[in-house]
Amino acid sequence: MSVTPLVWIITLAVTVAFFVYEFYAHVRKPHEPSIGEAARWSAFYIGLALLFGVGLGAVAGWTYGGEYFAGYLTEKALSIDNLFVFLLLMTSFAVPKIYQQKVLMIGIVIALILRGAFIAIGAGLIANFSWIFYLFGALLLVLAYRQAFAGDDHDPANGRFMTFVRRHLPVSDAYEGDRLTVVKDGRRFVTPMFLTIVAIGFIDLIFAVDSIPAIYGLTEEAYIVFTANAFALMGLRQLYFLIGGLLERLVYLAQGLAVILGFIGVKLLLHALHVNELPFINGGEGVEWAPEIPIWFSLVFIGATIAVATAASLLKTRADRRAEIDAG
Image 1: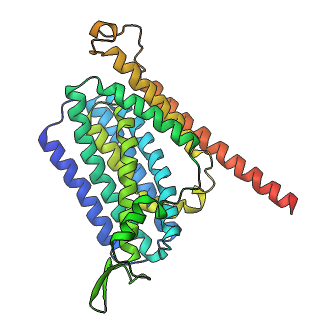
Image 2: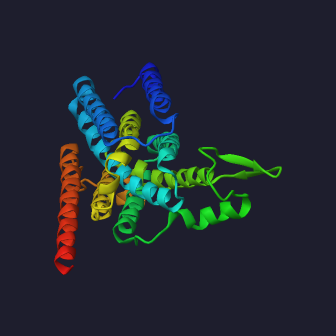
Image 3: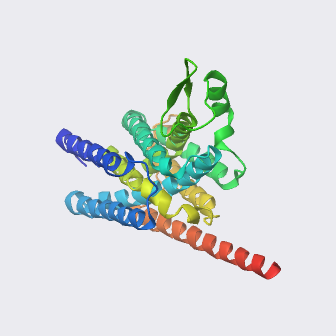
């Protein structure tokens, strides 16, 4: 897939323009979005992502179109998982609802910047070192295990990193509107709003570690990796307010994502064997029996896993609610 510098420039400019519009149209004036507003904009951004994928498939070929849709689904699912952590952060820091949009917007922008950097690094590594697929595959298998069996009692607002930040920065006791710093008695303090944004930035960095290797397991095209990530992050702010209550009902989302990450990890390891250049594996030659999993299968598998995890989660929470009612 050949992408000219002009196409990259236009894509980056349009992406920046969307986020600038988001800020000035919806975020600059503090308010809590209505369900209707969140639903309309969520539908708009999802529709835009689907339209882009159809256009990409029509122009560049449906192999690339399928890679985009598989990547978009994976990144969207991972982003929804991120929203759950953002919800925990908002609750832990007691962020007023009218300011949550600003925190989310800054967090999403930080996520896009960090993922952009990881995409560039990943593209360089893949172009020069075929063995990087072994590393990415092994990393995803470890992350899949942690995703499936990690406990739910971790408080991201009071982890080691945030404890370190609090120890070295003077923090005010209360929010001062949406200000990040405030001066009291001639001394400058950071506000809880500042701490929340720092925490989200740190969480974004951690999430980028599993996000980028995962999508590079579906496509080696940096342009597809970037656009899938950008569209997955667009509308995430509105989705937070639209499904905030639903997030707590997606009890099997972590397990579903673990299955997806594990699948992509295996896919990467098989691809690594197929293009092997390591001298101590098969004499530095590719392993012919290692199959290449087609993109259509990846797309179907990822979509089916998300659907099953969502349906199972909703059925379980409904059954638990009925059991509570019967017991009461």
